[in-house]
Length: 334
Ligand SMILES: Cc1cc2nc3c(=O)[nH]c(=O)nc-3n(C[C@H](O)[C@H](O)[C@H](O)COP(=O)(O)O)c2cc1C
View 1 (cartoon, rainbow, N blue to C red):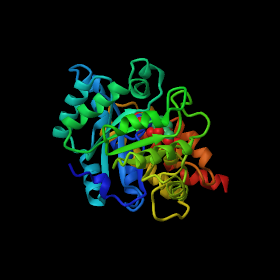
View 2: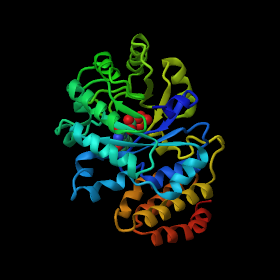
View 3: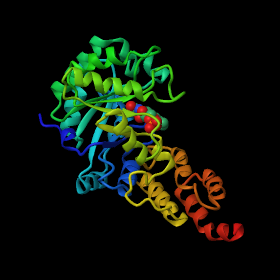
View 4: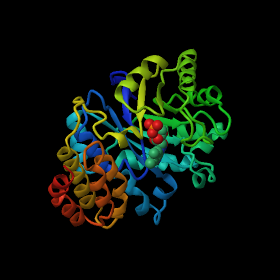
């Protein structure tokens, strides 16, 4: 199978899968202000295949891989790719879920989560807990590949409590996934400390020694494009995944590096909030949006005051009222 991953110009930049963050609405917002020269692939939030393969569970999880038509149109227009991330423990369910995703959805790739360190998930033996189950992990990748007509990748960490990068990545490479994204932390570290990019480099060296054609992407603590380019060069990775960097700057992947005006920031916030309400209506709580308000309301005079007011909002109408008073706010603080 030909893989789109191989056709992308290196270093490839990807937007990380992030639960309750990278839904179809936010992805489209990021995409709308990104240059396809700097953002090549976006990932969905992770979705439980146990839920997806269950009649009652399905409606509760399938929103995680929803793709609005407008997002798909923009992806196609910019020639940017979209990958669905899934998690679980049962190879048969990986097979079944992947078949359905390939038939019913418009993704360009499937990614298997072998990195999430959240307690209630690893207790089930899933995600980063799979690092301790090398045989099962391989079965999962092979079952997913067998069901898939699009490339299959894996996102993982460097170990559970001990760093075992070479042993673990070596195990994954035996199944020849299209990409392995290595977050340079162990499960135990969660997001503590700093990502160890020397471990990421070990994965690259191992891939080269094994003469595998799997691409190795690095992830962890990259907060600017420039740093991404530097790290790609220094550690030899084929691509860089950006997670929390997007919280600091929604224009992370933009060509235009100018400071954004308050009007531009608030207008993007408004677009995001309206599209969120239109897409999710009563399915998702408006409060989820509040974590995003911070993203748009920083770096300008008066931002803290507007942010505080936005944090009190419980509807789009409330946001509209805060914006209507924006002129007053800016006058009163100038
Ligand atoms: C709010 C949040 C949600 C996340 N959800 C997922 C997820 O669904 N799947 C996944 O593989 N990683 C998830 N992650 C981890 C990120 O994809 C990424 O590996 C991590 O944030 C480190 O990258 P960064 O330093 O660029 O943020 C999440 C991280 C955050 C902050």
